[in-house]
Length: 402
Image (cartoon, rainbow, N blue to C red; front, side, top):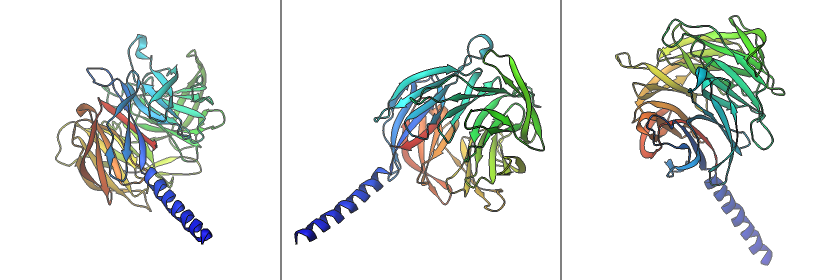
């Protein structure tokens, strides 16, 4: 009898434990990067808790004071966060910075250290899959910098600094190279830098042991200058570079989960480019380019972000000016896109957005409305909810298990 009671108690414990694990898995820690200048009410990086079972966000709190920590990157181990400080003041406007933090259990951040970005307006960053390096893109300077990550999460001195060169047809925005994002392939072998100034996605071989960026093979190439910490030239090399339509201005870049396709949103023409991808060489081949706007729209054309959902079935692109997100169905065989709908984000100047790990929700930021808004996803389409929080000039949102 006693053994039976114990057996039942154990079974109940296992069931309840499983239920608790399921509930806990619905709780995610959210971090929001912001702009702090130009009258912003923001003071730095903010944190909130997202409940995926309800689609709700808790009231945000200040995680760390920082100057315009616009884009963020989470360490794959979950314990550290990195931010680019997107500043452009000073001689040569090249005094951007990169900051590192340790994440506390309550979501607040402990500052670890800061390094210079070797350029101005650093605007994007990513940690490699092994958690050993942080890669940063500088808009002013058009360069990509790689930092080793120390065991305590702090940033080491830069080990790689590569500079793009050239210009585009739009002389008001493409007078020089402007690296706008840096992303890595899932296998950690290739890094992709979308450069708005030269209308190219620059492909590098990434050495995940040393942090070096090397030349990759491709039909179309660009010449890259690698520099020493003092700015002197170290070497020149060529690497693969996929082109978008001239004047497009590629901004951000998204790899398909299968690794066979990739996408870039083009800021200056409000278009999205689809590429096929050679997994062995990393080379990209353009296969399609579509508008992200209604055919009759005559206002500002400017995209901000593109993102493939976790299933690989849908692509989303945010439109500034039109203040919307365009949703596309992805053909699983060809990677080509079909527009499904364009949905208002309920605010002004939508920027980065994120899809939660369950794939049921999309969290969108409206920079000029100081809001983060939750949308429910149904068959790839965005459905508005009443769930939102206020954060001053939100730019980037990142999410991890709580």
